[in-house]
Length: 149
Length: 143
Image 1 (cartoon, rainbow over the protein chains, first blue to last red):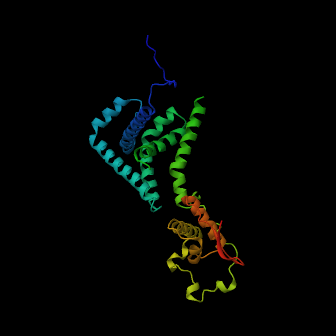
Image 2 (tube, rainbow over the protein chains, first blue to last red):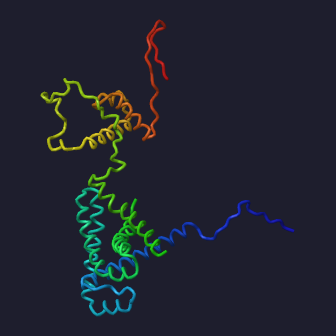
Image 3 (tube, each protein chain N blue to C red):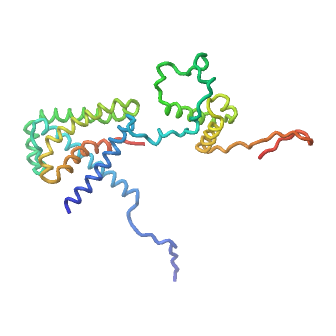
């Protein structure tokens, strides 16, 4: 007959904290990707002066495929605005006047997204929440993407 | 219920936007004070008026030791610079007496600044010595 010794400490749980943290970070990156895509689509529809059909993804695909040039321009504009937005925030550490350019880039991007998402969002949520979601949706990617010490 | 949820989300987003965008901008433009900009060296800035003999700027040595372009530098910034200089001196092993010899200002306040710098840097203050000369002769008392 053998005697088995048991550890004096009883542990519960099967998920390692670092695994949970890593999964959460991937979730944040997924949100980042979705927001970036929505920003590009917002620029695409905003330049056309149309509302984005966020409840009809197939319509979005069809619209993009039918006007790839406009989609490419929208992507380019969004890349430039994103770079300006991210870069000026870093430069503002040294010179506060860069904040002005930051707000211009942010405002420009928000304006396109306002044109694209205001109508569909206000149909779903209150107007004040829609306004904040549009602004936060433009700022959150930067918050998630740029590493901070 | 949906309205309550919307209000909660709105408050969260507003708070985040405030801390991430509005507050840094307002801090950088000096609209609101940062914790760092709070004057840590208030003690150095003596509110006592300087003696009349020290008020004159006739002599070159009594004029401000900054260029004309820098006259707009805020008092707060000068005090922060003074605090930083004292901290560097303490870090490099300067004694209170040596620091007092080169930094202008109230000696007691500078002593307070030096002590604060030591605490921030985790440096133990040196042993205090007292030179005594009496009927037993001269000796040094450490305390």
